[in-house]
Length: 92
Image 1 (cartoon, rainbow, N blue to C red):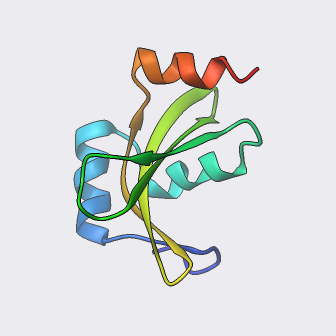
Image 2: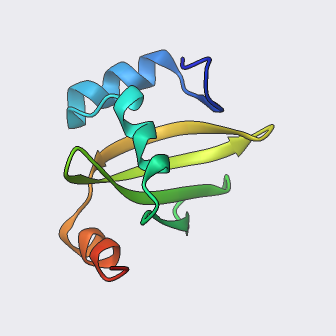
C-alpha cells in the first residue's frame, strides 16, 4: 500500500491485477497526475465506484476505484479498451 499518497488497495488484489492485466497499482495511480484524465461513475456495482481514464507512460489506462474516508481505494487497473481510449482522446 502506498502510504505517501491518498491511495490504498488490497495487496492480494494488486498481485491478482498485476498477473491478469500486467498493470501494477503503484503505476496505475499515476493516472491521477494526468491533467487530461476523464473520470466517471462506474455503474456496474452496488458500491459507488468510479472509473478514470488517464495516460501513463504513453498508454491510456482504465482505473476503477472507490472512495473510503477521502482515500481512493484502487479496485482494478488495465489498459483502456478502444471505446474508452476514444473518450480519452476526444478531450484533446
